[in-house]
Length: 402
Image (cartoon, rainbow, N blue to C red; front, side):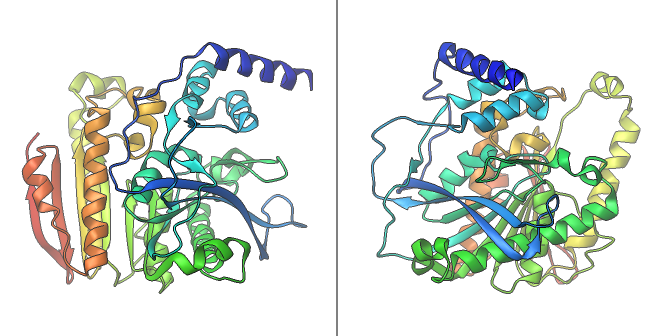
């Protein structure tokens, strides 16, 4: 108890002397202001992984369009207890100074803002990466909400880094098989998270549930998209295959697991992939050589081609200079999560713009039921290369050398 008290004092002391970083984060580009609220959904049909006497708890945050104006500063992280736990655990190998600084960034979402009640909005379900808090994608959530989407950010229990409503911490470190990244268990975890997504959709689209009471009448149920990062990217794709309510999926730097997913995907898929740039010296410091690195890249390319070629329509977009955590807020709020892996890293704002624009083009194509004009991005950005799959093969390939 004394250790926790000292940690809390240390946290308050640090936050008092860290200047706010207002103006350094990218601003949402849409025409709407942004509201946010948080809730915990409880699925009585499934047990908690740790406590078999409790239902499965699923914390969520909902970002949504609003006409309310931001009057007081809104900070990146306001849950001091969760921040203290992140510091205690050394979240993502970050020190207390970096994590405390992260909390002071100013953001645009207005807590408990008034909901726009005379319109219908498309719905996005988002799944985080393994061990990553849903908090660390909020710049994307705010961007999408500003463009007229209702966004539900899901914290899959014991898969990321979250806290239940009773204050209990739930992180991926509490699940030893996830820590070991046992492949068979990861596949079971994907199925479990897919069930989470379907449960959340049912809750938010039903006016008989507490969350649905506020949002169900505002959702265009004909336009629901699942998006995820890393392991959550695999989940998003499988969810679109399993749940007919989902119309499309976006996989942000997830894998393929194509030994299990021999699916003929009927829904459009956008896959965004990182393509780190390493010098020969960088590779040597990692215990690799150029030949091995290139061979590994070819194997990964073949794995994606084997899976995506089964889709009715799929886009594969690579971003040179992007790292795995470039598909999160890390380049802005915890840059060490990207730069510590060395190599040539794309500028944070440019990388965010590429990710943002490619997702917007894809989402717009779903709303209009037309092909996504992603080739125009390749013409503008030399960092990008594009493959388009359909009908059992690659129908188009566009690439730039960077």
